[in-house]
Length: 484
Image 1: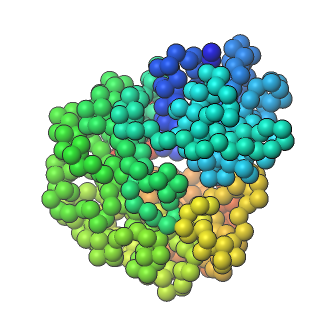
Image 2: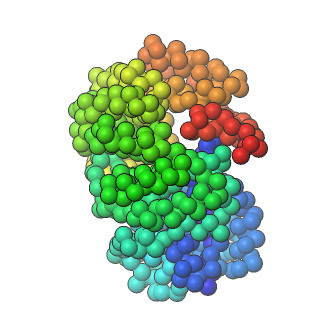
Image 3: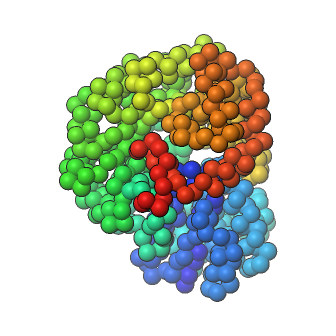
């Protein structure tokens, strides 16, 4: 038995060091451990013709494709169409967060035969092993012109998760480790219930590798040259018992690292200990400068927590990276101004901090979704509509749509150090105007909003052409790849 797993291309995929395609990589490892021959393709690097050639050589029955909401959907549809045109008998299987959220609508597309909802390791193994479709938990499929949804599958337990490893022999390590930078995930889930987050779909259960397992997997990455690690876990600090031995490991191996931490969990003692054990940056989901909106989002944090995090990180010389959110249903102009003012206050406290502002998109089955529907939000009716979703674009139900988009685009330029290093003419113009807008808070409709939408691909292609260098998120400058 054999199968192929595909990770479609993302927008702006090569601006920074790409993350391993963990969504298909752990499924691949599970399959290999159960004697299934699997080949993976990461179309951020691989070519679709390589996929078609491999299909022709091996004739698998199922092709698995991992899909997130946004531009990746469009690329996944193109891939699915090309496969279906040449291999009509092959079944296309979509998995990932978008098919999980909207399985029925996803299956209404003629190119897609089967959906895996939730975690894919067990269901995909049972599928390629020949188990009856109706008996596989977590599966949705077409049968006799109807769409069938089997019961949900159980999440992998902690012991099962610890059996999964990164199958480095299935990828080219150099693609994902550049200048020592490596993006890592060591856990799944989050116990908190933020109103905008997909984790609620997975019962908010946190499960993670043990400290010992983390060290085993990190040692493999170190062998390939990793030295600076960005932990992309939704909640890296969930289990403090595993953090202590990891701190020791980081220091012993001279690892520089960055991870997300809730602002209400940060105190001086923890931050100092992290700093002493290699932490150079911390990522915080601050979201809003309005306590009322923080409560609407069910963040369970306070404005005081956010300010305290800036003071602590400044005192310990830790770069703080803040994520903010605007366009929240029921957000007023006063709330929006409070967010901008707090961002400026945090930046004044810790001048080395970075930030980004995204526009909230209300995902189905999140609690914020119903609020948006009540205000007139009309979700896309098909996959092509969902493929156009971007976090710097505001939905039509928001009254101050143009202003929100200008704030998001402006923040993308003034809030991140990477733009300090980009000097080709279009970016120079954007930087000058963005700084002017941000300092004077002039966020009325401007030409750069249209410019960014019209020339998105031009900008990306230009940035991708400059691939003799790579932006280093720890050094905050572009480094020659040849020097790696």
